[in-house]
Length: 195
Image 1 (cartoon, helix red, strand yellow):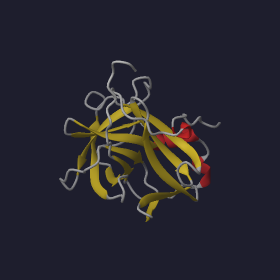
Image 2: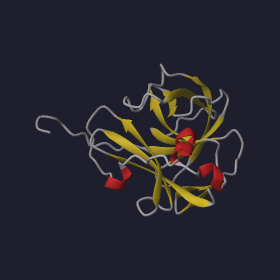
Image 3: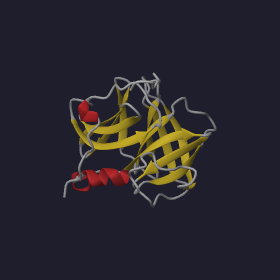
Image 4: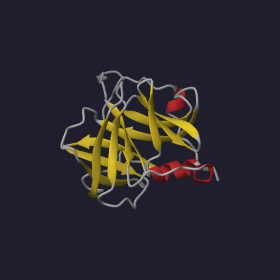
């Protein structure tokens, strides 16, 4: 990368849980990573707006959301889906044409200190363990993680602790500038759907 400057950035990441009603996710619903693709997404703060990008193109306006910061220790805030908006909230990965965008608003009027989130909908039961949010899905503990590669961020969901357990979902977020990479190889590999 001669001649280019690598920005050393501290990105603040968070987990977003969309709350239309608490739902129990049983083993039959979690048969493949395509299920995760329909129920997970990435949220970023863009020009003062909170944007959700997901493979789910059918989220309803007014859906309650819970923002959980992945900064240690994790914290929460409440938000709502305002509307579908592919123009205001464009894709986080230009190579993935199946992503849909939504605008969110923070219900409590507060600004969250984080810049990025993972979205889960409908929300599973969650708990906090050792400063982390843990979701109970498929009768297993699911953990949330993010890391950076040279020009983007990788968001992952793991059955079991990150980097030790099994990755069940991955989404890339193109930042558009160079950053210091801190991902392991297992965090950058897309999770392939099972049939």
